[in-house]
Length: 254
Image (cartoon, rainbow, N blue to C red; front, side):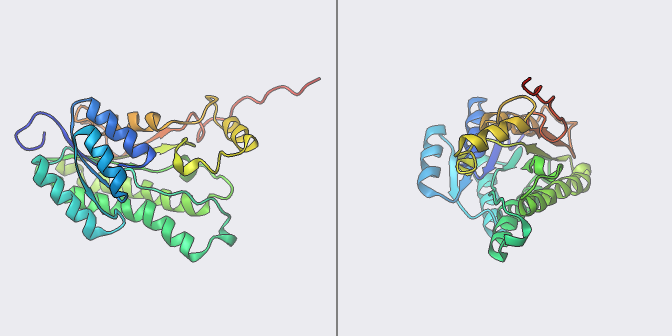
């Protein structure tokens, strides 16, 4: 446990997003001490006030800013038991119409932020271990049309997770990731705007529904929990069966 307290201390990057805010609320409800980070100052201040948490505005795609936030969190909480990176973006375009700006922005939000998180969190946790949880996607493990940029970036998160888990295992730093299916968050609002698109997305998920931020937050909280001391190097599918199952097709009408 961090510092001299038996109450775990966690840092959530991307805390104002759909998944990040759900995770922050879940950890707070468990009694954990929190440090929250996000780019939207007003939203971050509101969430931190709601949860009685410390916070800092920062750009998680910047190594120096993530270093600063981790240092602030350690100083404020007396150490860290876990860090979660919930920063991300969603670009769904075929490669031939994806601009260089789209590509660079996708890499920065999804892969650079994850690397910056691992880099800073591992340094802070070297003295006594801890847990790092990242967010990938089911699309990094199963081919879906028009997902080239996001699948490449989130596929990098999977590689990063496995390599970092191997590197830091001797220091008792666990590194894991979740790989969600389609989750209803502000990021996916436009994607699900039409009934046709929603129906098609539902049909792809064998459990018959889309994900919620709480679904993913529950998995992230489980990975962060010091109770999971023997879990590392895992990519946990939280996707309603999307990446691994093919639902039985309905019988055609006679």
